[in-house]
Every structure is written in C-alpha cells, then in structure tokens.
Length: 216
Image 1: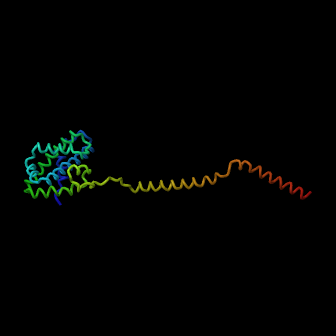
Image 2 (image 1 turned 90 degrees about the vertical axis):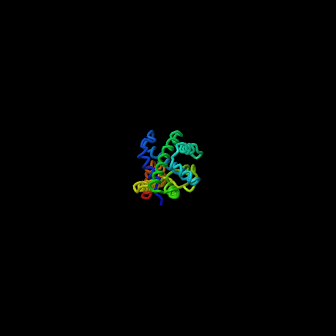
Image 3 (image 1 turned 60 degrees about the vertical axis):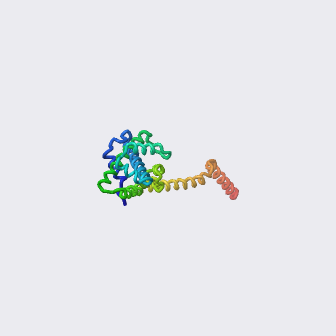
C-alpha cells in the first residue's frame, strides 16, 4: 500500500495554511479543505495518467502559470458542484496545489523516487482517496473508478431510541384495542337507562295484579 498522501497533505495544510478559508465556520472550513485536497490530488493523478513525464517535471518546478491553469480548469468544469464561491475555490485550489507539488518534490528528493517511484506513489493514492469526496470530484478528474465510493451517511439507532420506539408501538397498540372495545359498550342508548326503573315498576304492578286476582 502506498504512503497515504491524502492525510499527509491534510496535516500539512493545517500546519502551513492555517489561515486558508478562515472566513468560514470551523465545520465548513474542514469540509471545504477536505474537498479541495481530494480535488487537487485527484487532478494530479489524472494528469499523471495523461502525461507522467510532463507532470514529473512540473513537480520539480511548480510553475505558477501551470498551477493557475489547473485551478481554473477545476473551477470552471461543468462537473464542479462546490458550494464555495468561484473566486474562493480557485484561490484555495491554487494554494493547495502549490503545497502538494512542493511536498511531492521534497518527498522525491528525500526518497529518490524518480519517475517510476513517483508513479507508484501517485497512482497508489486512488485507494486512499476512496470515500473522501462526492462523485463530482471524481467526475471532474475522470477517476470513474472512485464514483460511488463515498458512503451515504445513516443515522445510528441507539438501544435507548430502539426501546423508546418499541414502547410507543406497544402504547399505540393498546390504545387501538381500547378504541375497538369502547364502541361495543356505547351501543346501549342513554334513553334505555332512563326507562329501566319505569319498566321495573310496570312489571311489579302486573305481578301484584296477578297475585290479588289469585287470592280474590
């Protein structure tokens, strides 16, 4: 497995570019930097696939015009879905690209990678980029093998929440049972309760008459 440049660059951005995107909240800044870090690195991988020799030379020189061209391309791409304003996006991409190219150059000099070693390092980042960004980042850079790699976040259901949901279900079921019983009890009309004593008196009167006639 190749050295993880995704996390390495992320740490270097925190150290070397602490003021980057400070106009946004801490949470937003973290999301944007992660997105741009993946976007810029993915572009370098794509460019390496197209012409490894040229990009290897650019790693050694970090030409500002070349960097600007890449940043402009990513910002104006039809696949770009970043929530950042175009100016902020292009500027941030440029700054992060400068950092990435400089770090790659230092790694190359320290490790004596050469073009073959750099190829292994960069192409090995595809595995580390998996799940790091939304699909538009990969579409922008023609890295179709990474599309669909970001999992859809799902809310975890705790045991407490599960028990609460179960109790609510039981209570609802009990409530429904009571509702089914109550109509049966309510079938007896109110007027029948009023007539009950009258009916009883009438029955007693009939019985009294029968008894008196019997003894008469």
